[in-house]
Amino acid sequence: MIPDFRLAALRGAAANGCRAAALDVDSDDVTGALRVYERPGFETARTNVAWSVAQPPVASR
Image 1 (cartoon, helix red, strand yellow):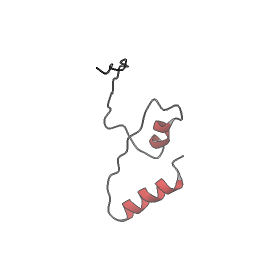
Image 2 (spheres, rainbow, N blue to C red):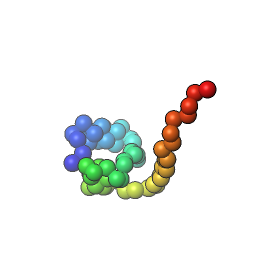
Image 3 (cartoon, rainbow, N blue to C red):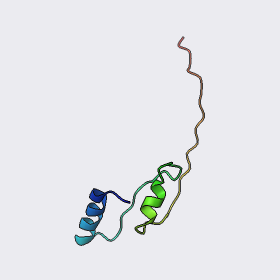
Image 4 (cartoon, rainbow, N blue to C red):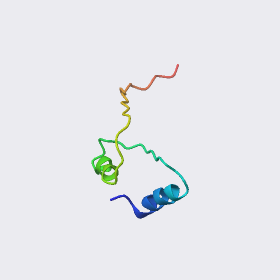
């Protein structure tokens, strides 16, 4: 469930003319964050992928 303060913020924004809301969610989050926002109607509009590789520290000269 979306925390009450977030729902209140979304409802307040809608009451003041806001027609859209957006947020970023880590879909790999083990807490199920993506499902939490899908339940009240949020839909995935765009996805991003970030890649990284660990490198050893650079030795100072």
